[in-house]
Image (cartoon, rainbow, N blue to C red; front, side, top):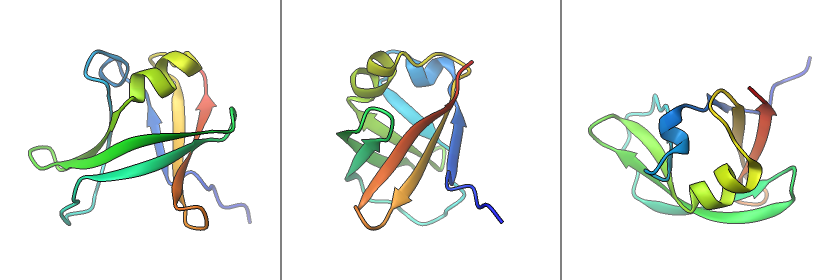
Length: 103
């Protein structure tokens, strides 16, 4: 059977695309996450980007911050309602990123 590789899927909201320059991700994990730099490989454009992942304790969610707007929103022309996917690539120690559906 086919297993969907996209462990994190997100339909983008206005706040993911706005001035806050961050992508809010749902998290069901209760562990603390220390702020950490992560590499994100854009599979369509074959380009690597550096973002920071941290946990928002007040919301128990994770956020990707840094140059999210410049590296992904503007460069890829992301819009509200687009669905993106992320999954951890343990061989390359990075997240793989893809636009799964356009709004």
